[in-house]
Amino acid sequence: MKTTINRSLLAAIFMAAGVGMTTTLPTLAFAAGDKVEFQAKKLTAPQMLAKQQQAVAYILKSYKAIDKAQRGKSAPFLKALAETAKQIEAVKGAAEAKDGKKFANTLPVLAQSIATLNQTYKLSGLKDPKVATGVKTLNKMWDLYLKRIMGAKAKDPAAMAKNNGRRIREMEGRLDKMAQNKKMTAKQKKELDRLRKLLAKAKTNNKRPAQQWYTSYILADFAGYYAGYYYWYAAYDPGYVAFYQDSWEYFSHEVTYSYEESYSYYESYSFESYESTSVETSESYDFDYTAEEYSSFESEYEQTEDSIDQSAEEEYAATDEDDEIEAAEDYDDPNETVDDAGDDANEADDAEDAVEDDAAATDDNPDNDDDYLDDAAEDDGADDGADDGADDGADDGADDGADDGADDGADDGADDGADDGADDGADDGADDGADDGADDGGDDGADDGGDDGADDGGDDGADDGGDDSGGGDEE
Image 1 (cartoon, one colour):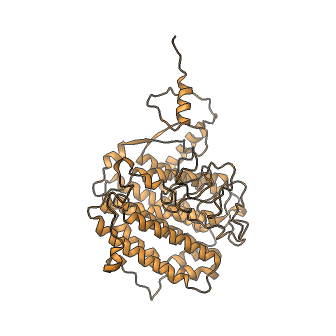
Image 2: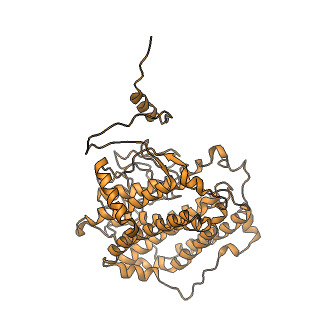
Image 3: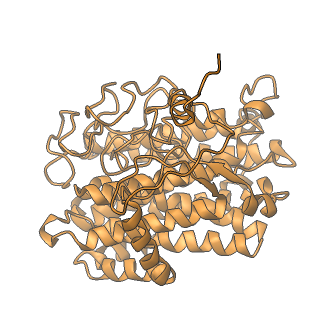
């Protein structure tokens, strides 16, 4: 008996099971205005980068449409948005010029700007669903892009491990010094705990030759989150800004030494593969637009893409807080000289940073070479209500660890193990190592740089384990 197979139904079954089909299915025609829930797309790395810039443009457009009274405390977010647009262009330029060294050195700077954007977004208190969609899309595309442009093993992993190990150790010591401040609040203590977890994850990756390239990105997250706290306090809670200002110059400079060594992981990087190899995505990343709406948006974007960073900068400059933020960023401590800690040899300490051999580093396996980007940490690196206070414009409850926004579907508590949103497709446990949503396109790994909520709008941080909030990373 001849059996007729419904290819569309078969494709749907395979997609639901997470299995791709190699047979090309016919393209379905939709009437104008019809919303397509999912259309698989193949994107090259340059297209993924362009999609990130589209996300920035979409965020800015959506932000401008919000009534000023509903914009929360968002000046630091706008600063980070402008910087992200600028760094996307820098990475794009380096890739087009096939300048491997500049490409490698610029990527962590982009990672830092995205981390700052996520942190300041959460602190802003913005609740606009379109802005949330833009932030979510930016982070998911960054996650996919990062996996596409992974670095390779350095020629001398042992030397790289020593250099970054020394930097991480000194940064940990600086956090310990900050923690001795007797005026430190419970909120600030939680923020420091989060930063410590980032350094711990950086230390783990630093010892594994195949994962070592990722260390700079984790340090970039550290610097980005620190900047997010610092800018926000400078703008809206100056009474506490000194807590971060004392170490601002140190941290903002120390991480750059690691960035400068990133080329060691990209010396043999193939830009031919970068431009030609495509990866099938798990969802559409078209900002919930209909096909007709997206076409119109894309046309508008193409006319303005070269000036997105400038437009965002102008929006930021129009805020009342930009002067305070810029003054904080330019702060120069006359007693601070930031030398590269990577030059400070210490035989006993350096022994702790010895690289693991391939047998010990279980992820150092060519058949499994990016699993460590998906592994969950013991917690998601966020704070349970660290900045939930009424004065930060973010969450309603200062200590309830609960989600205060009905529309963000995200978990505000780093340690409650529970998901606040009934519809976010996210995993309730911070430490299960699994992807949060079958359709979120991202990971809940402690160090993946991806988004772990299908609708939370935020980035997990390259190494923090997940985004807890509907608008970026938990403070």
